[in-house]
Amino acid sequence: QVQLVESGGGLVQAGGSLRLSCLASGTISTLNDMGWYRQVSGKQRELVAVISSGGNTNYADSVKGRFTIFRDNAKNTVDLQMNSLKPEDTAVYYCNANIQRVIWRPANDYWGQGTQVTVSS
View 1 (cartoon, helix red, strand yellow):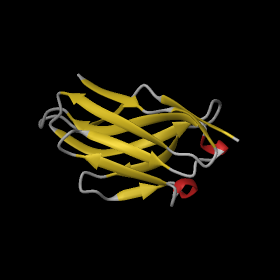
View 2: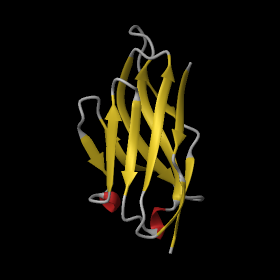
View 3: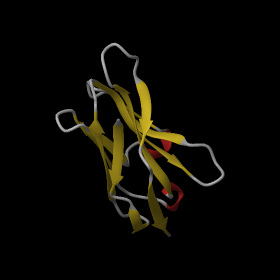
């Protein structure tokens, strides 16, 4: 089995910062792209940031310059540093990872349980 466990959400005032962390554990042969998505109730889940195993990153336009994604390949973790938070960043944030559990099977996407981020104005 594979588990993604997130931590670090919470309530913060506008302009503040939060750091989200995600740990991938279980049977993992290859850990490909890791990323963060967010979802507001009634809306589609959207990409926030993604990072490849080689460190290439991609960000949603709405968070560029404010959020930074990091990963530690040795620890199977991915973090999202969120600065200059805005009320519109309020959402449930989900960790995502594309994982190949064994070399003879294709990789699949896995999701964490989600962590709430609330930014007050």
